[in-house]
Image (cartoon, rainbow, N blue to C red; front, side, top):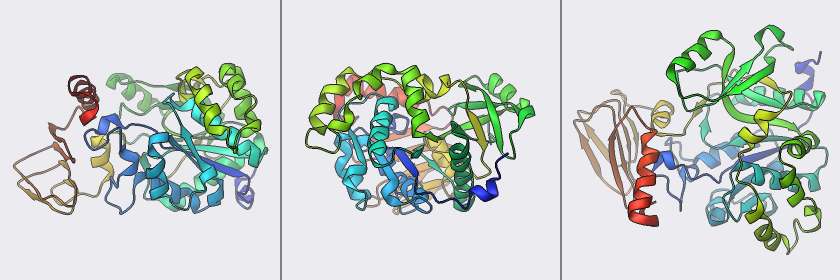
Length: 371
């Protein structure tokens, strides 16, 4: 058995972080749009964007030069503006949207050139924790165990609600490896409330934080098993990565890449993975209800983002507006009000998933102008 206390003394020079920052965040339209998605906004009124907070969270214990960011070509200026200290070589820009598997492999190939013995952790940038020290301790333990045992690790946390948006990790509770570490039995995704209730009551299911790590060699083996076509497309990447040929080669490769998510097509098919049960407060911000839960609230339960928002007789609502604009809200209970540059959304809370349908409808009816 590996002693995690001793593992914490190991340095993290071989640890690399890959932050996913390419998504469109359509569930948070009209704030989040194709030209500036949610990761580039200060959603929680902390004075920092979601991307900035995620980067800083990891840079507390991992060297900055070991942190990579995956984004889309069109967001290059946004990333460099918000992370001016990010090395140009650590910004992974995808020419096309092909979900997460191709971009993560692209990042792994870049990391391999720097350190073929790397331990790589992948993170989204749409979650928040107010327990930074606990988060860092748990991540260090997870990384260290993964390194010592050459295994795939995923981070789970105890569900705090019947949230249907998050995926679940089922662990083998009767086969604890050691404190906080269990074999994964299966991964599950369900939006059926009754089934989620059963999951939580069983004590075997945890929220999937989408944080996972593994030695880079194991990640390549996993890709080779479940997505050999992607491996083949990148097989000679050492010849052109970090050269003038890189962009041209990507433009040839990406149209041929399958549009697949690492989570569903590769991670969930992993034959053996282990779950680290995190002890930190975890809040993911996928939709406006999640934002309300994570945001500081006034005495009437309103999450207000905007320095010139004035509220009367309003409770348990989410209100977002640009600082330069005066917005007055009166007489609402459990509503979402989002005033962006060219669109206004006023909708009752309770079914945030339908907002994604609003986005799709607006895009179909009005074209790209408001999307």
